[in-house]
Image 1 (spheres, one colour):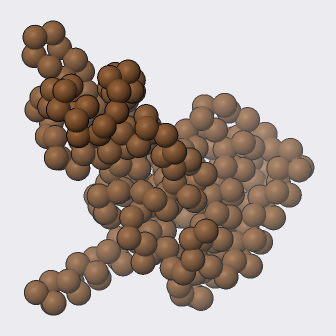
Image 2 (image 1 turned 45 degrees about the vertical axis):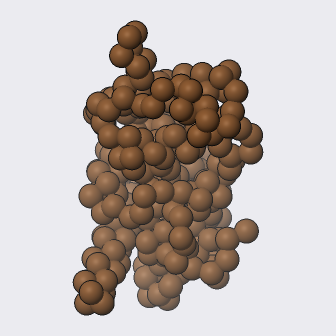
Length: 263
């Protein structure tokens, strides 16, 4: 369990794994995949560079050739690398990376908060989640409408940053489910990771006023969906996404100023 304030977390990637239900690396394949993926995203192996030869990687990670081969296949499937005959395994440009992949996103966040990256995620969420909310207002069942209010209530009752984040994630999952569109639900990992990354920077639980505003904003989404008001649901969802990003951006800007003052 994660205790204390999520914003004080040392590794956002670890918290993302915990809060979004992702399974931490438990076997050799997962361990090597995480290490190599993070090394690529961090720039240790820059774009267009050639990875070390297989024998070097085998020595570094102490795994079998079969395990390494499967790891490289997985990274290739995520768009990070490609093997070329007589050249080696090349790191692909970032534009080729699958940013909708949960691991790729987590490796980005493992490098620490990046406000511009969070801004990009917020823009994508606005493009997707406001339509999910509108569809939910048109298609939700009575049980789904009730569940949304229930998750908003649990957010209001939360006393820790972790529990608040978990209930927030469940709220957005419930909206995607109520939309009745399977594609909305299939991209839930992006929403989960975006939310969790924002919470690693700043949780509204740290401020009673901010918490009350956030809960009220989610209740407006739930009410608009329950009352079958698509436009109101769109507006309310956009406000929630924008305010979450702005809260994280303000906190990170403040931290940068503090660090500059310590130098």
